Image 1 (cartoon, helix red, strand yellow):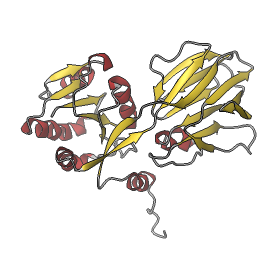
Image 2 (cartoon, helix red, strand yellow):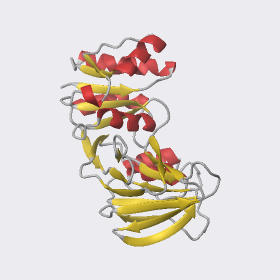
Image 3 (cartoon, one colour):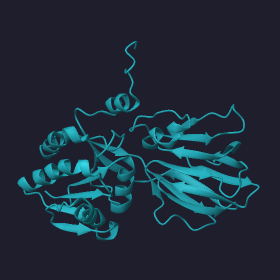
Image 4 (tube, helix red, strand yellow):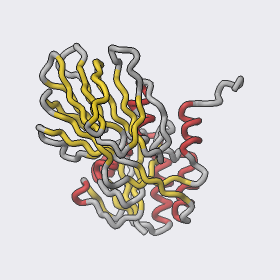
Length: 293
């Protein structure tokens, strides 16, 4: 067995947790491949030099034969680990270095217990749907797949944009708004949730189409099957608008059509038997904190 470790930065108070983490792997004689910028951060900024086997700098030199990919950080780091490894066959494990996340859902208090369960095979693998985005009439994203959402936003003007949306070639609506989000079930607890979208369980086979600050208040989020092909065309006072895919964004011309569909592969994530999505949901949203409920 061998593992890969990805991270960006951690706070000093998380170093003791990392020391236990790497000591556990060393005692189990498990080779560790670590993201080189993260290793340099630990050595230079945190005065901690973990025992490792090898480095990787991007998906190009990533060792696809590792058994697990551990993402150390928060949900944003989890998305970065997906971008920098781009391997869909290896389970991605989220270890949270701060507050509990929806993706990085293994807390530092239970990290060693979680590692023991993983080594013993006491976990389940969940496959998460991905978005594939094509920019028709413009250069595509260098990596045109996303785990959370695709977003269209106004850019060079304070005026709203008019987004014409079609589903499988059938016109849905023209929406005056600040923007629009198309989210996966994973992304339903991210940006889409913050603008009033519904929460979907990760194994739902749907997309959420959600307007951002629409001019017409009767425009509501809609859930559609992820077998749909969605086309968006944008117009407004400006000639350009912003399109983002998870953490990446590009400015495109108003003549561009955005085509969104489900990717033909899924991302594997790992979850412990005693850590369910609904438990994370209760903890993250603090349901039940009110003693009257």
